[in-house]
Image (cartoon, rainbow, N blue to C red; front, side):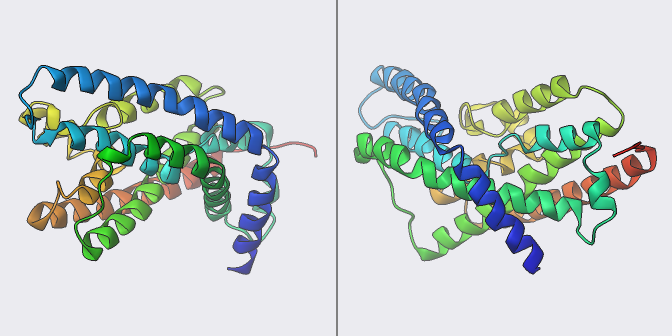
Amino acid sequence: MKKYWHVIGIGIQNNLTYRVNYLTRTLFSFIPLFAMVSLWRAVYAGKAPGGSLSGFTEQEMIFYYLIVAVVDVLTAVNEDDWQIAADIREGNISWFLLKPIDYLWYRFSLFLAGRAAFTGMACVPLALFIFCFRKNFMLPHDAAVFAAFVVSLALAAMLQFFISYTMAMLAFWFLEISTLIFILFAFEYLASGHLFPISLLHPAVQHVLLFTPFPYQLYFPAGIYMGKISGAQLERGFLAQVLWVLAAYALARFAWARGIRKYAAFGG
């Protein structure tokens, strides 16, 4: 376990080298959020005061985007899939086949390091964004809700990483996987609740989406924090989230095992 803590430490140091890049990326990532907030304010302007849309008041809708921004900062995969694919394509994984280190957990350690560094850089601009919309800020109902949110957040991070890791494993079979990664990102952006809460969709579409891993990456943790998901729905959601994490992990292991049989490196 010590070696992975060492990897995390080195990963944080390496990521802090690009702190200005992280800060700039964070600042520009909030521009679409301001646009979405302005859009929803215009939508609710046509409704009676206190009116709601699919169970969301104007305050809740704006706060939804705030909490989604927080969840995204803490859990999103940032270029890890590209780096893994590059390791495979360039033969860098040969080193890991000769050393007593598991490549999946090595990459997961770097993912955690990246999230820690990115969160550190994003704290100030994120705090400023929240301050600008402080009137819409909501605290969790109680400590139990916040604890459930934190657990869901950890599961969401693992789910996102294992899915991205599995996608990167396609580099064993394809020279270029950027198109496949962009297709996955498009599905995640729409079906995870990043663009809008999936409760706005038709009930039949919501039902189908809940059988996919995407809502458990963003919408589910955000819904827990806001108190939109509770009781039996919360229990079913946690069960589905855990099952998807286990399925994604198993698929990641399977893809590595099959891919490494096909892998060949020469020289070096």
